[in-house]
Length: 310
Image (cartoon, rainbow, N blue to C red; front, side, top):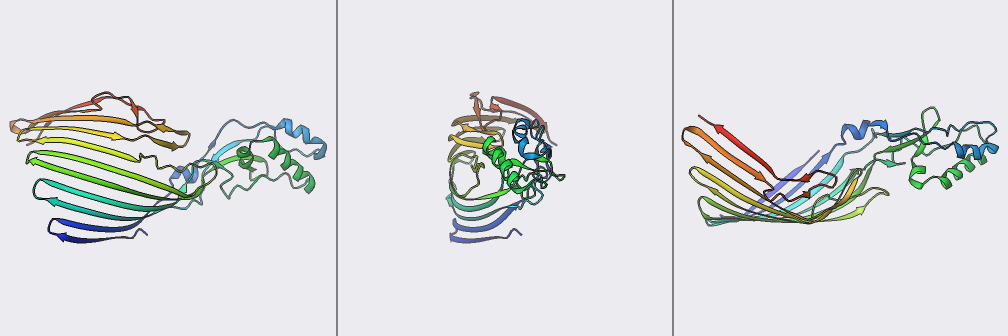
């Protein structure tokens, strides 16, 4: 269920307060539930098996080529969010529109990246049951001593009992976020619009998981401004946005996205008879920047169009 409720109270004819509550969820995707692919080359622990041979009595551990797999988790729960929002809107005559919003959200049960030892369908590795308990414990101690902790946590048993390394997904984490959004629109003339917007984001990790990153992948501060003209035949706009530096984490891509400023321009003209031409240039100053770590560098892009309506 996703219940939602909004309460609107008018302070005056042109001013209002809004209180909003909602719950939402996001289901795990097909990949997170049913992934089944090799995660790397098989791991060879035959040297460790040879060192343990005096204890094994001829029993094979199958350590010569242990598969490494990335597998989905069919038992994943949905990600959940509960949000509260308080907003204020005011129309100041016919020349200005002001809005301010504060929101507070609680998020939990995120779906992790691929991690070792987190899927309950794949229990920690157990040596062959035909071996005495003392020998089994000695094997586990040798594995724990010689493998990196992450690799040891990934070690499990295939359905036939053979050793296997598995990385999978799990639900984890609780995060509280809060933020402010401020918007101002000015209309010095009926055909001219000036806008200014600012947003602030803060988050607190209340509960995490070893080896998993919990980042909003979004900047703490954003500022945007624009000037637009909408005439009888001519439309023109200049938009500028500044984004603060922030950390990004998604899969194997984790690093800093530096602060950047981008300017866009647009121009359009309407001829008689329904003919319209125009162009848009994004990142007109050709500022090289990343908007996601591991993504493409932003470069200048131009789009011209020709339209006809009747």
